[in-house]
Length: 357
Image 1 (cartoon, helix red, strand yellow):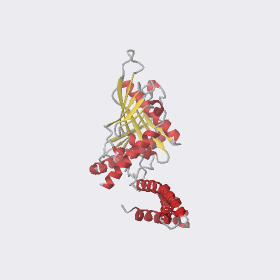
Image 2 (cartoon, one colour):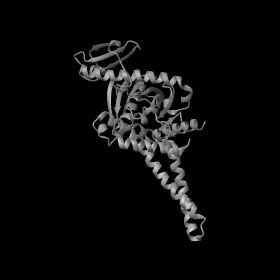
Image 3 (cartoon, rainbow, N blue to C red):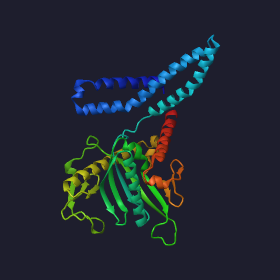
Image 4 (spheres, one colour):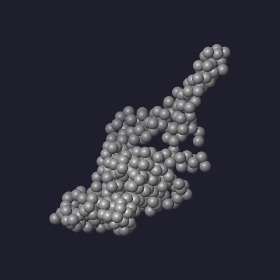
């Protein structure tokens, strides 16, 4: 890759977008202005690092020129500056190479997360509840907004299933690595013999579909309403506020009953349906590009066991990258940054290998 040529093109595009943002015709069109501003923001870090890279390179070239001049004292100062600037230039070049890697087009999207208890009965449902809490705490730390769309509580603090939406900046870029089977090893509260049990929960992180991403025809939908019910008879609604939407061509069924208003449940259910249809189409396209996707950390099969949470040893291990952290308690309280950063770096490394190959 010709780094300088590519970076000059990026800077030129950045400058054009800056001019467009001052154009009265774009300023008067909020939708277009938002689109231009988003592209401008996406390129700003690359341009900032490139300009710094250029300054350091200019200083380094000047220092190298002076290092072999006729003035010995000036030459020594120049050689010292060369020794300082060379690693800086290398670091900036490496950073630019990573910044120029193809971005996941979904990275800036909000997400819909589905967590389901797997093998292990009540213990699996409790673990699903712990994962929901972990993602909620992580979201709060980033200023994101989690909102439950639908849930099936067990009555003892767990969930057979919970589906929730998270709104915020770059949510998918941080949580896309979470899809897969999560395994927990711990002694259940109900276990009198102190034996460690193994349970599982599945997580699916879907980029939220915008209206422009997927079109749903009204005639393809079958919409039913029914009375919502909660765990142990709690939160029972005496009106038909719960909504079930069936997408006839695909057979997809979504339900929403967490709101007391049928209208609100219907809006949430439609959002969930569109996201699932969008995910189906994306997965179909990704399957066609399976060879290209091979080895990418962020797109693992949801049936794959990705992580083990071992309570007795306060240990969490991500099997995709072989990373073990001895801070399970902190991670379950939302301290996920170290894990997420390691997974992002592993994916970048894979992309760099693919580019080099």
